[in-house]
Image (cartoon, one colour):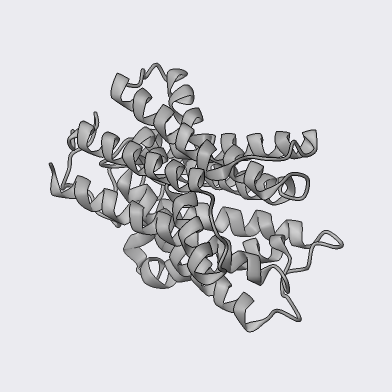
Length: 308
């Protein structure tokens, strides 16, 4: 197996673990900060972090093409749509149903790929179905909730699936770090506009707790800047179906962190579901064998390299 494929899988698994941990962090932070403000601050911090690390070099902006800006803004808008509908949807339905519906992106990715005339392999279909079954057992989606909440969470899953698929199709025409920065900036701007709506918390939380600010830092630098940088880079070596299955590990990590940090116990069927998701991830990882994706040249592109 190609070493870059192994590193891509390992980095995505680490980021997915961090995303899972942020569920517990967010639960505490949202006691003193609104969801739109938290979203704005985390992506604003992510943008500043990437600007400091990469954007201060003049060469970083060289050959910036209009199509890259357009793709970055479009995928950033999809990310924002996912976070907005997820936040709003959780107001109307149970947390367990919310988690399961969000996880439906794992099945939506291969469906979306059909529109691009790419048929998933039998192994990919099998691993996707396994991951979906595991998600159902883990989430135990009880409570019908409001129809609006269900619709919003389905929209959330679609937004996240579309973002992943679109990034895969533009990845050979963008510079990784710059494209990630464009996405982070787009989410920050759109979330900032939402915070200005009366009752949404504003751009700056006047009474945020220390835990809330710690959550902003972890979300901004780790879960957003590094997380989506890893996602963009990994799509040079892995396809969106495999990545979506790795992402289905997020509720597994969330359950583990909730057990340790918040003492929230999981049902037996939940742990069985988690084991099934792990099995699906191992199946797709071992079965794909690190094959190169069409159009990629492993080893030729790094975070600051462009194919344009």
